[in-house]
Length: 295
Length: 285
Image 1 (cartoon, rainbow over the protein chains, first blue to last red):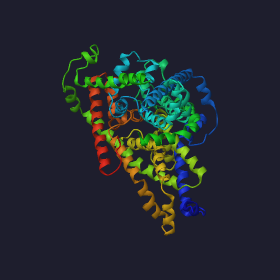
Image 2: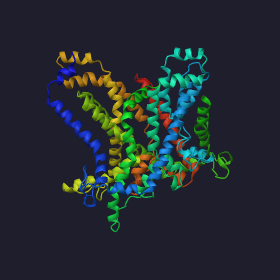
Image 3: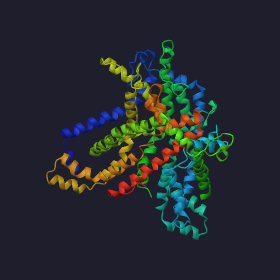
Image 4: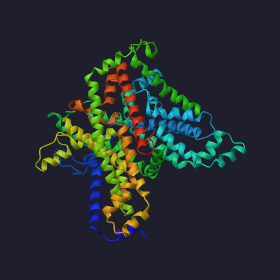
């Protein structure tokens, strides 16, 4: 007998309260997104009078048409797409190498090397020394600075290593007896068996790179190389880092006009995340669980 | 296979670790990390005497504790609520929506927050105005800014935080509920005597983990949500290091602050781990 089913066969006051509260919470969670979409689709006067809440008023696509004409945004989007692509590839290869090698119990010095990696989770040189190294390598103001210095995420390494450990050893041994090299074993046997975890980790890395803001702030100076998040910030808050009082009387028309534009830009820059989200969701719960148990 | 990995760790993690020595040096841009003259603890004396340094520590702790106080119980309550939902479709939809903000960048969150919370024409204040209330300076008053900061953080992470509790809750033995039900336990009693005790250890570990991160705040949130008006509460250790080091090129001082923070972090972490083991939970390291 399942109590959960039994007690829910009838609708109780408790369950009504539960569902209503959850619906309200979900709505609150969703509200900021709806607000963005509503602003981006609303007419000038509706935005100006502050009537827009979570549904568009005077529906129009003007803001989106304006974005199409703004090449800067598209250049930044292309830069970010490039960084995301190269970054995810680099991160994935390095993480696979690290976790595959260190998942082997026979590897000499395994504990030492693993310790070396885990230690960086708890202690690191900090912003400035890392900055000096990146600068010293000539990576400053290059796109490489946006993914090379932070290529491996220790958390993802742990998740992947845990997964590799669970692959039956006999499969690999059989391949080795048949004359396969370590690299062949990895590419032909281990990786095809690990597609779910590869997909999960790739998505984690990709979302991380897409959303990354601080690295670009730190390492990128040339406005032509601005990433999407940097561009977005300068568009939303002005070039200066600490601008706050943006509302002034003479600029109020353009200010409110651009409010729709700002929100449309926010929407456009978040679309890629929303697109990969269903795939992401399929896997991340498992990833989080493995990672939290830790090896 | 391990060689590129080790190269990466040595170059980008361990060389910078050696780089912390500039905290004990008078860093000179032309002489580099090795060539700059040693100056003992001068840099530390300087930062310990600085008011801004202590304020950034205080702000870090205030923001972290405020967030924790709101985030921690809310995550547990939300998990318990989601756990009670029996309609699979609704549960899945609710979870999908609640996890979503975790994947949005802080720039976007700050943009949305500004749109919602601005005093002039922000959506929330428009609603307040139509209800006849005075506008609230969510972003420009120190206390309200902390509130806004907490709201944004909770919004972004509360759903994501439920994953771990939901997993623990799904592991609770169903027969316990059945037995309690047959013995006439009410829903509330089942919650208090079965559900809560069975997730107790996860709660304790999560709390210790969170507490061990109290000295750390990522740069993005305070930097992007903050503004000049609330600088006295939004300047945290990481943003201070950034502004001092990168914007003002005071490399030695910024590094010293970062090093101080790392050392304190390690001490807290070791203490938290000891404490966790002392009360019979698994260690967190």
